[in-house]
Length: 228
Image (cartoon, rainbow, N blue to C red):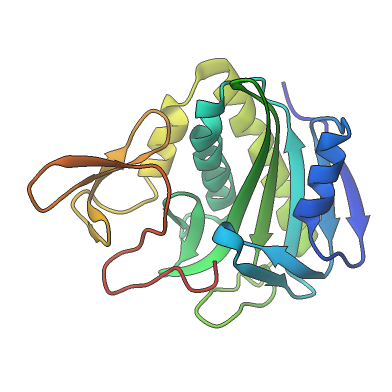
């Protein structure tokens, strides 16, 4: 079943994520989208600034997946796959959910959740895509912002429906097809795979498998953290 998107447009906001979270807490329905043409106080992961210049895509939306809290990593991977598919064949993904072109970040994803016991009551997904211009060390797509938005929301809806019907396996395979080669040297170990919850699995210097559930991860000597 596809998501019924309700897009709310704002000429300027400090943060689409903050407003969308307010709407989620207030009972806003799944499919509510907050988009702004200029974002002055957006945040990336770990509280880093994400300033969206005019022409770039900045939006947040509400999901109400009714699933365990442990599924957050799966939904993060799902969102990265949807963004990458919208960008096109050249897009690659970096764990947990950055999207790259030619090794440079072109899109970032941020998630906030509301819990009811051990279940997700709501999830607010924020997405910033450099559709027109890019900060230093990042890539610009130079595509139509709103056309890209519509394609992205279609892909989110498609993958979300597949996730709810068939689970995570096919989405995981899609992500693995766009990421590092097995054995790639990362700052946290050599890349092995991701597990069924979306956690990163690496092999350390003693050939032991390690599970990474959070943190900055990048290929050694290629610091993609800049611009997060």
